[in-house]
Image (cartoon, rainbow, N blue to C red):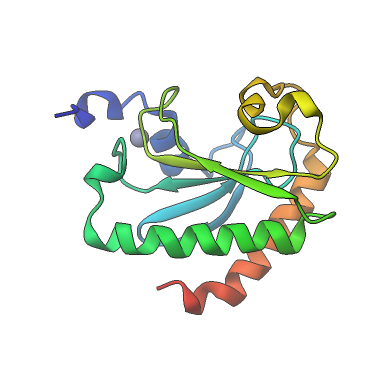
Amino acid sequence: MHDQSKQKNQCAICHRRDFASEPGIPDTLIYANDHFIVRHSLETDILGYLLIESRRHILDASSFKQQESRMLGQVVQASTLAIRRIITPEPFRIYSFTLAEAQPHFHMHLIPRSIDFAEKYIARGIMQYPLVPGPDPIAMTDVINKMRDLFARLSTDIS
Ligand SMILES: [Zn+2]
């Protein structure tokens, strides 16, 4: 069994969840409920790159409670819909995966892949996508605000 308590104190995802209002931590929060948090990623310059994080410090879906299992599908759907509706031009693909290598805390990457994406980053090449520069802060804030509005309208369907 994976020892979850030992690593919890050093977990960047738990830290961001608990100290999100501290200065210096960008406000990337789009949506949160009792089980999952949706954020805009700061890892690349891809607008609409979202992260779905479990609130609990768990490694993977084998540790989900029943409510978390049920909820994840709804949050994935709402997040994917938000990307399709708000990112222009509408992405050709939306990559979704979890790795939990850098942070052993469940988080799903949802990455919009535009039709004109550089060939070398398509499919498995996405792992080579450059980490700098990060997102343009003004464009990212605009996307976050639009997605917050959309999630607020969708939230009655996510329960
Ligand atoms: Zn954690």
